[in-house]
Image (cartoon, rainbow, N blue to C red; front, side):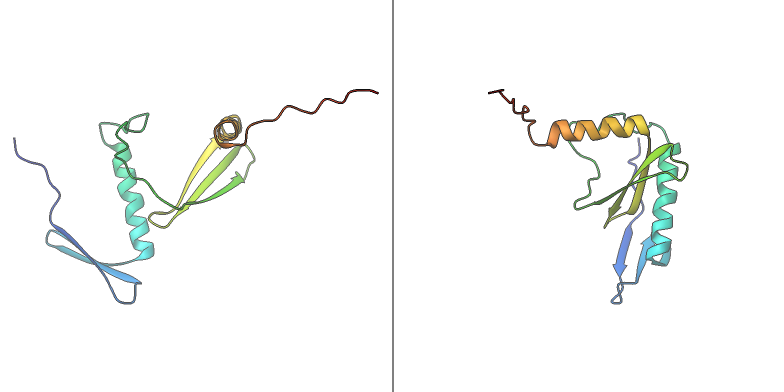
Amino acid sequence: MTEKHFPETTITLHDDRMHATVTIGAETLVVDADSLTNFIGHLGQLREAMLPEVANHSPEDRQFLQVAVPVLEVVDSDDGTRVRMSFRTPTYGWIGFQFLREHALKVGRLLVDTCGPPATAPALSVPR
């Protein structure tokens, strides 16, 4: 069986930090941030169409893409039926997820239950 590998790839960021030269095998492209974001989106759509499907749970060994320091934005969808959670990542730009409202509530409850301060019992007032 032959070993599978991606063609030799080199990436050079230009001094202006507005462009980069990407060489994959014999092909060389000069890209800007918008064209690179567009290409990453196409790669994601390609991966979505491939088998095997992405697993339903993250790998136990935690060997998967992880992004540090994301910014979270939560807004209603235009029609109000969903909640959009969008993450700004320095690596991939904005990535949005649309949740049914009931699923968004579950996410919120889980975050509060898992990460929130411990609930304190309400103080009882004793009549005098």
